[in-house]
Image 1 (cartoon, rainbow, N blue to C red):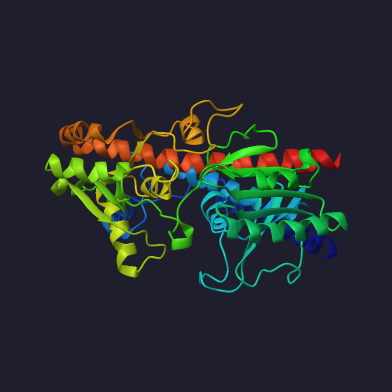
Image 2 (cartoon, rainbow, N blue to C red; image 1 turned 30 degrees about the vertical axis):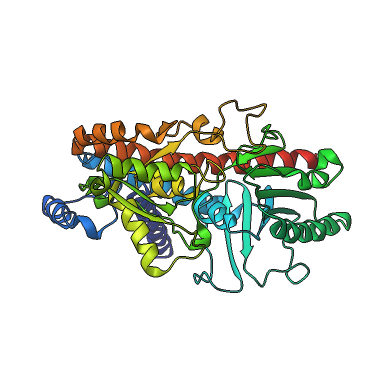
Length: 435
């Protein structure tokens, strides 16, 4: 009797193990079975085009086999991500966001989230893991020197150095950070700088390590001649996060629907600027009805709900977004147009100042965008605009759809590559210097 009971228990254990292996196989490796009825239902549900998120890069005729394979790959990625989260990080970095471009870095490039979601909160923070690097982000008015915990040996300080008042504020943060380094509370420091639109950033040089300072790395906005991809990298201006421009997810309607306007221009028209030329050309050629044009005489730093909606609608409903030079060639509207699949028409002209070619790039202005193959329309004069719009009239909807897909995919890859380059630069410099 004892022998029989023992064998019976062994059999139960064996069956339990067999069932466990079978269940694991079904969950992680076996494709889900979908009946023909379910396929029809899913197809009908997919017809609610404007109400669901849609991947514009996914071919409409993709087979069920490809879909199943993608699901399996996603499951495997989730398993690997969970496993990597349990492994200790090779590098931990805390990002102090003391300029609005920090939100572009964290939310648009790195893909992080912030809590609380209220943009007006006094303190906001987030955490994520990229590879074997742990990143945390803090921002808000409550983040002041000496009144928050420094939670990593390595810091990225996001600063604004566009004008004297901003430089004074940035210098206070640099002095505070320098004290932490001198007291061995920090090991490495990088700076992401919204630099001068004329590229006059000499005030920062004494803080750079190669000039006797403590800053290991600099990521600087605009075409600085300092860029060498060793300790100085070019960084994009990005969208106007200070106006709460969001992370825009592509939708079916954004890609597929007819847009009622060939182009748009909403902006301040300065005296004796090329922006006056845009307005004059549109009036002279009687193209005003083809484009969404809303010029204003004075710059407005803040948006109302109505003006913000109007601007987003203009981007969404226009095939092209006209981007004239301001104080610098690079402007927010370039990246905001990309977010909505509206092709930027960029005035490819150097502006006065110290910006220009560097030892790495020789195609200023907009060296970074050009080096990454931005699918924009570059022009030297707005007198070319009538010919551009005439060509737009002859394009079919299908041609425009394909162009939107290319632009949206390029912008997605642009941000992925920037994320990879940013993390690689931190790891190469911070980890290498520790050896």
